[in-house]
Each structure stands twice: as C-alpha cells, then as structure tokens.
Image 1 (cartoon, rainbow, N blue to C red):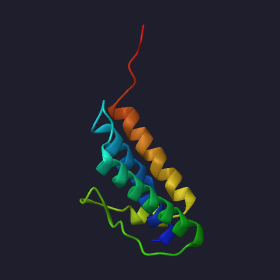
Image 2 (image 1 turned 90 degrees about the horizontal axis):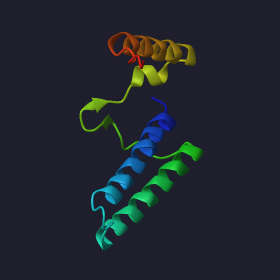
Image 3 (image 1 turned 135 degrees about the vertical axis):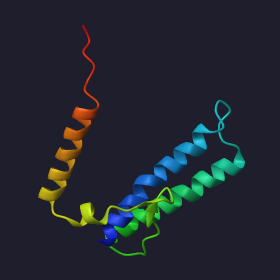
Length: 103
C-alpha cells in the first residue's frame, strides 16, 4: 500500500483521539494531563500531515482498532474499482436498511 494512503489513515484517526480527550471529562473539561495529551496528539498529527505532504516517514498504523486490517485491496485499486465498491455498499445498505416513510 502507498505510504501516503497509510499516513492518511493515521491522520484520520488522530482527531478522534483528541476529541475523546475533550469529551470524557465533560462538563468540566480536560485536566492538565488531558491538555498535555492533546498537545502531544496535535504534534503527532502535524508530523503525520508533514509526512503526507513530503511522502516520507514510516507507517505506524497496520490495523484499525487493533482488529481490522487496513483495506489494502480497496485502497490500492484504481478509482473505478473504488466507485464500484462504494456503489455496491450503498446498494446493500439501501436493501437492508430501507428509508422510513414519513407520512
């Protein structure tokens, strides 16, 4: 898999980790340790974005949530394959979860 794709996965999940630090201690907000953690996570995100721009670095993320492997096949395929994959997924959702009819 292309390094930039893997780094993009990393960049997508880092903001969720930051959001979690802000949400868990509500309504008071994060304490000093939480603020420090957010600072470190923000620096890591900036570093990941820099790696994406330059095409350098080592991928850290091999799985999502420790159990789901990255989607090498879907990500490595061309755009037309991705479009077909998404179209099939949306069709399946439409069949299994039809929209509610509101009178």
